[in-house]
Image 1 (cartoon, rainbow, N blue to C red):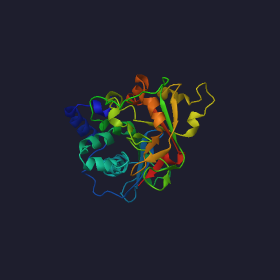
Image 2 (cartoon, one colour):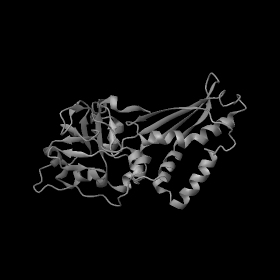
Image 3 (cartoon, rainbow, N blue to C red):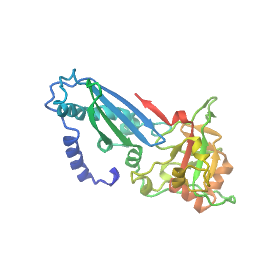
Image 4 (cartoon, helix red, strand yellow):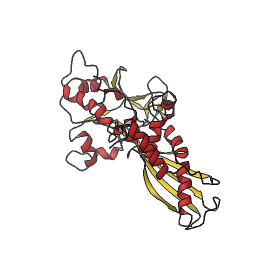
Length: 308
């Protein structure tokens, strides 16, 4: 069950017991050592990976008898070191997750729930027995689900004069090279984010999160788009696609090359108006937007980044 499926009353109990169990309050700890934290956001996998460790000598911990105390130290500091990494994630072209929290679009309780639902690798002493380390993985889809507020999918604007269009099983937008930024005299690589938009060359909005089925994204199992590298669409398979990609976009996806990108942080591809009409001109292809059957091919250097 995803985080969105937890009712508020049960969520409160869940947070209390989870925090007091796996992540104890640590009131008995006389002093907390400096904890080194490293994080990486892998947009291809849709995962935020975090490693935290500290010097056991600085904490006055002996091996191996001090394991429980070492776990308590990591637990007591967990929310404090993982939330800043979540804050830094790009939510859309103009906002980070921290901006959304500051605007009240994501509550501290919801953010804590996402953090506490992380997959936890049992912490252990390092090989040289000088440090204690723990690893955690937060699914991007859990963050996405917590930010879905609409109850039904909106309808994209239908063209007055539809264009003849075949039925496709998904949409792939290729934007893996330096592209001009719309409205600016410069170029950049497309940046991944939680909620990208798609625009056409006349700057009509084609796709955004409120056009998706809230049951699809609110499940905590899917993201708004799948970010992939270019070799995923050049495979020696009947469809030419990676088998994992076929599970999302099917074996007959519409492939579109972005002409430019858009946004304060350039997260949004801009496609030709004629390509947009192919998507908008029949019920089947519009349904691909609603179901989030969309992948963006982006530069492999943008697929993962270290977080501060």
